[in-house]
Image 1 (cartoon, rainbow, N blue to C red):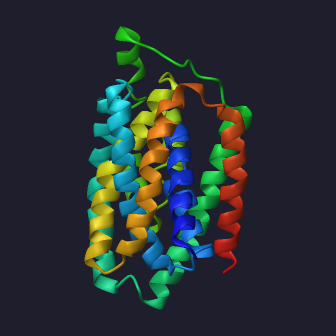
Image 2 (image 1 turned 120 degrees about the vertical axis):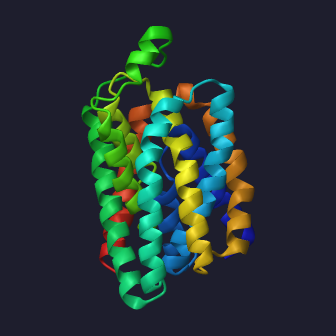
Length: 263
C-alpha cells in the first residue's frame, strides 16, 4: 500500500473526528485491519497513540474556542484512567499477541463497533436537536450530570473497552455524554469527548507500546494526515450536518463490526 494512501486515510479520519467526535478507533482500526493488513493487536496499539496525538491537536483548537467543558472531562477521566491501567496490567500478564487474546480483541472490537453503530443511528434518527451554544449559569447547569457517580462508572467501562479494542472513546463516549448531560450543546459534547480521550488513549497507547504493539512508521504517516484533518474538522464543528454525518457513519461502522465478528 503506497504511503500517500496511509496519509489520506489519516486525514479523512482526523476530519471526521474533528467534526463529530467519532471515528478514531471505530473507523481507523478497521481501516488498518482490512485495507492495510495490520494484525489486530498492532492495529489497536497503533490506533491508540494515533488517537492520542490527533485528539490532542483537536483539543488545543477546541480549547482556544472555549468549547471544552473541563469539569465533564475530569469526571470521565476519573473512571477511565484507572480502568485502562487495570486492563493493561491484565494484557501484560497474558500477552497481546497470543491467539486467544487476538480472538478476544477481534470479537470485542466487532461487538463494540455494532454497539457504536446502533447508538449513532438511534441518535441520528430519533435524537433531539440540541442547542448549538449555551453560556453562563445555563452552561454550569448543563455541565452537571444526572448523578455524580455515573460519569465515573461509564468512564471506567469506556476505559476498559478502549484499552482492549481502541473503540469507545468516540461514538460510545458521545452517546454516554448525550445521556448524562442532555442539556449540553453538541459542540461542547464533541469537545468533551475529544478532550477526555487524550489522556485515556495516551495511557492505553503507551501501555501497548511497552508490549511491542505499535507500528511506529505507520503511526507517523497517519499523523501526517490526521493533524491537518482534525484541525479543519474542529474549525467546521459549528456547521456540521449532524444527522447526515452520523447516519452515514453508523452504516459504515456497523458493516465493519459485522466483518470483524465474521473473521
